[in-house]
Structures are given as C-alpha cells and as structure tokens.
Length: 339
Image: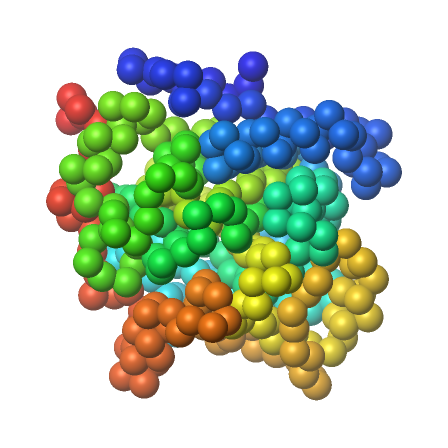
C-alpha cells in the first residue's frame, strides 16, 4: 500500500492509497474502472486522492520554468497576494493564460475528471484557477484551515485539483492534509473570521484520532481535495520555489459566482474539452495574467459569501491581501513533543 503515514500514533484513518495510472491509460486518456473506483473510494473515505503518472513531465517543466521566472515580477508588484502572512513566503500567482501554456492534461486532466464526475456529476464546471508558490526562506507555516469558509452542504460540492510542477515532499513544502476532516465539521468549528482557520483545541483533538500527513507527491501527479478538508501550506526548505497550480471544480447545478477571464486565443482549444464545462469570459488581445486576480467566492449562487465582501474591501483600500494576518501558536498545530 502506498502513502502510509509515518507517525507514532498511526491509526487506520491515517492511511491512503494512490491511484497509479498505467502508461497505456495515460496514452489513451481512458482511466480503468478499477482506478476510477479506487479514486472514488479514497475520496469518500479521506477527502483526498493522489493520481500518479497522470501528466507528461515536459508540460510541467515548461510551465514551471515560466512561473519561476515570473515570481520576481509578482514580488515587485505592490499588490502581491501573500497567503496567511508575509513571513511564510507563500504567494498566489495566476499561471500563464496563452495558447502555449493552457494544456488539457493540466487544466482538465481526463483521469482526474473520470473520478470527479463520479462524485460531482457529469461535465463538472471549472470556474477558478490560481497557484500557490512556496518561496525559499519562509518562516513558520500556514494556519490549518478549510477553504469551505462558509455554511455549506453536508456532502461533496466542490473539488480542488492541485498539481505540483516538480516532485513535492516535506522538504520543499508539500501541502499538509488532515484526512477525513471533510466530514463532521463546518463553519461552526472555525475561528471567528472569514478565513476558515481551525482552533487549536480541535486540531489537538483530531490529531489524537488521525494526525495530519505531508505526503510525498511524485512529479506528474494530480492531487484531489474536497474543498471542506483541513489543510495547511508548509515551509520550503530548499533553494528553489515550489510551484503548485490550483483548479476548482463544482457540479454545474451549484451555479458558482465565479468565472474565468481568458484570452480569445484559447477559446477554440478549450471548447474541444467535451468532458468538462469551463465557465469563462473570453476577451480580445493578450492578458497580463500576473495582474489578473479572480475574486474568491466559493458560496452557492443564491448566497453572497462573507469572504467576497472582505476581498472587495481589501481591493478598495488598495492593500495587499493577507499581509495583516499572521498565524500564531494559538491557531496552527504543533505535534506533541516537537522542538
């Protein structure tokens, strides 16, 4: 079994198994029913799945080189978006949106969608893209949080696909995940602000049942996470930025507030992706993707999400998002006995 958690108080709930795509499956773009079933089982049990060998490495290398080069531009922008505080050195950066960088294998991976459509329904809707870049030299870690920061449905209603552009591990800041926390928790369990942070007493209680993991994820993998799952960005101890792309899918009945803004040059390519629904507005001419920010609002259409109002307020004030919010020992988890 792959991915067994190495932790002194290991429990059955702390185990997970990767879906391994064969070369034949990757070449054909067709996922075996056995792998679809394994992915659905793992997702329902843990709220988290890793699909290995799903993406050609050359596509990831091309994108990684461009995005690492562009981090200097992002950091020089006064409105650079830090996640959970400046000291953590974790930023969001929109990936390139031009024809040469919008690849189906990354944006709408058929092996991931084969599993997602058996959880959310046919032709799931993509309405949010971003990235998470862990820069070298960060101090500390993110607070453990849930991206479902609002009152939400008690079953899977949104799945985040995230893709590391290189091998990821605890060494370079692979995301910490808390398996099984997609069920039984909600907004009532969050710290009293609009970021979905989990209070320390609940973290300690949960760790007794199922401690968090920081899985090793081989390059070419697709990670799937229930939006409700507790997780946290971690420090990057290497000298190279660790780039992770994020794509969020909803069932089409959810009627998400969000939509993508994309250049018209990619429209014909995206319209050939008949296995997904990309909710997008297409605009003339090239886009400055580094200064393009999609407003985050993961609530359902009939509800105005609290998080949306905070984002709009920050934008009106012209201040970088998250710079005034730093995790402390009271809102992130430290394992018992850690130095």
